[in-house]
Amino acid sequence: MAASSLADVIEIVFEGRESVTPVIAGSSTLVAQLAAGAGADVLITANAATMERAVSEGSVHGEPVLIAVNTLVLATPADNPGGVTGLADLGRQGLLIGLCASEVPCGELARRALDEAGIAPSTDTLELNVRALASKLSLGELDAGLVYATDARTPGLATVDAPELSDHFNGYYIASVSAEPRPEVQAVIEDFTVLGSVGAKALYAYGFLGSDRRPVSPVPP
Amino acid sequence: MRALTAARPSGAAAEPGPARPAGQFPAALTVVGFLALGLLALPIVGLLQRAPWSALPAVLGESEVLEALRVSLIVSLVATAACVVLGLPLAFVLARRRLRFGRVVRALVMLPMVLPPVVAGTALLFALGRRGLVGQWLDSWFGVSLPFTTAGAVVAAAFVALPFFVVTVEAALRQAGDDLDEAAATLGAGAWSTLLHVTLPTIRPALAAGTALAWARAVGEFGATLTFAGNFPGRTRTLPLETYLALERNPEAAVAISLVLMAVALAVLVTLRDRWMPR
Image (tube, rainbow over all chains, first blue to last red; front, side, top):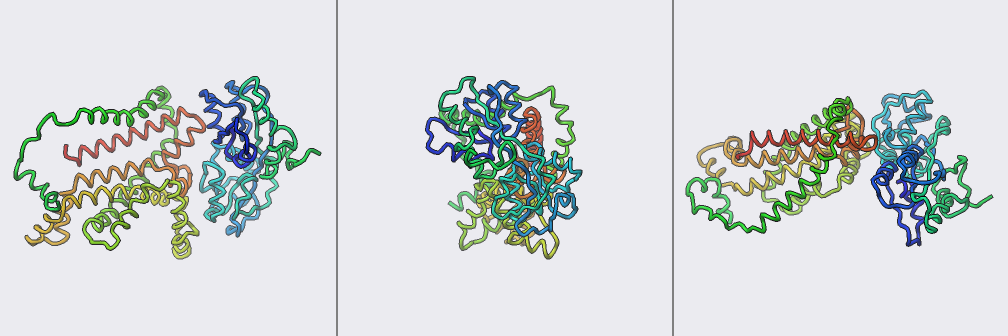
């Protein structure tokens, strides 16, 4: 079971594996499904809070491992119709501003970053997932918004430098559901946790950062 | 065939006809009918048995929920009014005019019923968004931009609800036929007078049913609203959007809000039925 934002990465990792099938959904949905007794072997969440919930509910065993992080970027349509030059523009009246709703990880992260920067955004919409926000920006229906670095690669999007955002990131955590994982389940976990393995390479290819907040190295140093 | 159906409204009173023979309704149909009722009722029962009754007052007192309820009522009622004002003429055109591509036009009218709502919302963005086909002119000529406004939420709800009204009313108009209208015209009634005093009263049950269906669709609208109008409290966040968000923070609250939504819908539909529909 893995968070929605990992869909592309999961596809690469699971290619050719028949004994294991991935389930992709929002992190909070996955944690709720596990708590309700869904049969699964591995859980990957898009932030620490949802993984902590799974741990406290006894849904996973062992210490969750941080496999990657995702940062926020200030994104605009390719032609930047609002003339956005920095994070402070999110507070400008008259611009159409989109953020993720604070109920989902990207929105919670955006709220923390804006609070710390002392910016009160003049928000026009609180999108329920980051991909919807990215697509509205790329269509030019919004002037600016905060999306994940991995979503900023959406065609039709441009990014504007916002150094205030670099201190804020969401961690992706992996954990085994059973106390003693089967060998093929252990192999999946190692795909993400061992440097230079297929999962680490895929994370790098899609723009995730490593747990040290540097690009995930494609080969072990 | 035409004469037969057209004669129904007046014919029923004129000649009583043979009494309906009792006991010829196949028992199997009754069984399947009740199975269908179970299919409809079971999920509702599922919701009710998980309802946090004791937490209900607290959840419903939350300002977010009340705000979403207010937005929902405004959006759904204005959208329903738009469906009636725009849908009635359209139903007349479909039922009474000989259209060259009648079948195609009718299929077009029903399209929003089959479109996944998210696709409907995207289509609305392409048409009426700031950079949309028509939207770019609305924006540059009048400074009007529909996405992310309450008006945009109304447009989204009306778009998905309109077919329900049109299809219901058009069917009734066809069934009623135009013999009565012609008779009224022969007796000297003008076109508007015939419409108001003859045609509309004849199809009153269908008008009520169509309005109720359109309103019900508008009030439950989620995908098109979210895609076209976005989600902002007090402006575009309707009860279904609030429910979805509540599901992320606290599933119990989501169940409670769904209960409100169902109670409001039930109240409106029952009231409407008592007032407008013949029993």
